[in-house]
Length: 636
Ligand code: WTA
Image (cartoon, helix red, strand yellow):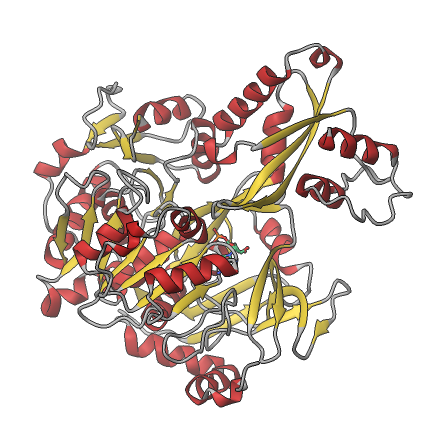
């Protein structure tokens, strides 16, 4: 049993209470002390949680890049801002100082501007984990363009739909990418995507793999050619705190991906503040987050959060197991990493290797280790704590979302005692609440419910690009007046939170959020498919894997089942990307449905898990007999 109460954590509790009592003063103080502004705000926060209208630091003027780079030059000009570690350990790492980063960003901003990009324009970035990914994002921010990074594992169709949704004028890509032993041809994926888009005027191509690529006259430009001629001077564009900084797409339980929009002022304050506190960052630390910059974790905690604090941040191009399963440990030893932030799926895949891989490296530089993206199971937590942190580094299990901009619930190192599988306590300024299905707030401890947030925080996304109504409905209507996270959570006897997982139709596979609807839409495009339903089931390494129930049309009945499975997965790969492929496919003659035609996923989930114990009352289904049939086929 625990022998303390939250009130016994005086440092935390005092701060927390103060932040809740007067959130305006709390955030005013943080924004004022830690960042540089061209002009101060006239009001800290304005909000209407029913209309989903939120404004932070009204009328303030700033540029996030001035905070991330320019202001550090006087004191830290020669300090390394970015350590770039390539995919292949035989290739040399790159050390980019703040001075150097300043010049590179300025040159790139000039290139973008000369190609017609101006404040408010959207620029898609489809690059591997190379320095140019960070540099082009910062160049956009410096000139006021809105970047929208597309994870370089997405297919041409997924790229096209994002480009179209945000109406991007430019896309930045590379001749290819190295990931482990694979070489991917990104430029031809872009070429294919652009056949289905109209808004793109220019394509900028960075050299990485020396792949032979086709260049379209007038549209495509090689970055290297323009870079040589570009000026190193650039006048920073002054932004309003509420001007958009970037759009990042995330999966929803229904329909197309949602372009979450983050704005300049609040996002900067929130990522800068959380980075410093959660990673206990000190001046000479070497910080490494293994996420891809194509996801929010990379945006907030590889790029903006660390650079706002003048930190040294590692960008790693490769994968944990290439060329051998000790690649992570080798990089920690090589660069003397002090903070290491990764995902449960990576921990589980490395934990299944022999501990010799980790034990043969000197990891004594580590001070804090962290996890993000999905619930971390007990076994993985302990393995991480024992073998990586050697029981001397606090494990920060950080809960947050693309929509929240930054970390919301997490231990604070050396302040909050950790508890395996618990994200523990809300950060100062964050007010979580648990709600029951009848929209009542659940008070007290040792309870579970739907996780909501009561008061806005600076990092919250302001809208879904082009669809404020959807933003309002998705996040602010289920529990009026509160932000609904889509997650379920448990609050233990002292008030620690444990995130239990999604309560909607988003499934997290290897830390990637996947909506069931877009996958089902892809499957249903197969000419032999009548209908389909996707559910998640537990997987040792990926956390969840995808199980698809597919009902065929008559023309599909005579077809070879193995070929059909391959074709279905190929369709998903083409439309979304290989990350969304199904692990198991079961052909069924019908799907269990309610009388209103809704698929009963709860039952399908239990069957996929192999748990046939109690399906609850199925007599109200339109077709209860189908449940036994599906169950028997699953067994047989
Ligand atoms: C899940 C990633 C448990 C959660 C930053 C959330 C977590 C979704 C944790 C957001 C954690 C993230 N423990 N679950 N520490 N961190 N999640 O938008 O379901 O890619 O809603 O943002 O990941 O995923 P997203």
